[in-house]
Amino acid sequence: MRIEEQKQSFSIEVRPFVSKVLDEGLFRTTASVKVGYQYQMFVHGVPCFDPHLVIEEEYETKKTDEEKIERLTKKALKFAEAAVSAKSGAAKALISLVRNPILSDK
Image (tube, rainbow, N blue to C red):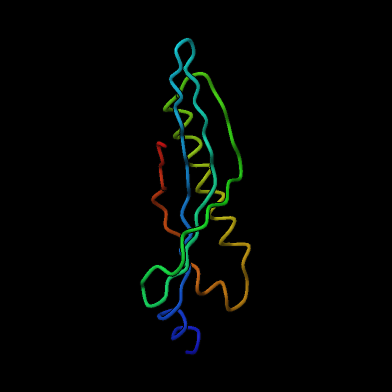
């Protein structure tokens, strides 16, 4: 019962994260991709503090391939799932996994 009360007032959301940055230069176009997950604490459903990013892998290519982005998005989901499953005990009950990824084009 106490865990349910805490979960209603305090929770953590974990989401997969993929960021791709395209640098279109005069002679060459490069793209870098960062893959990982984001977590954020909520109090009574309201975000508390800024979200925190954990970058697990980085890639740099000369051309963005949408098929690769899709594969990396699935990989980001696996990183997020692993981050949630690594927790145990009472804290695990407070963490939820949001399956729709954050896709960033900075």
